[in-house]
Length: 60
Image (tube, rainbow, N blue to C red):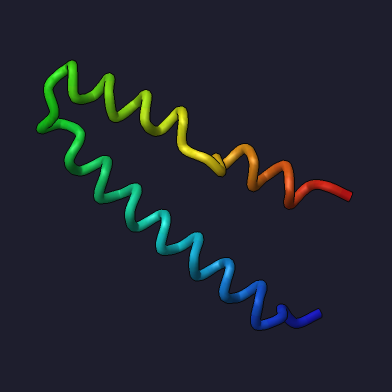
């Protein structure tokens, strides 16, 4: 079955997020330990999280 435009749009958003995460990964080596810890805490607190999205996608 072909994908709807909305599904394709969501997949494009996910691709955009992946590009952003690659940029973040490229910058991480330049951070000191304190900066890494603060960025990590910020990531943990970010909502919605990937887990939230996966839960919504797998909900029946």
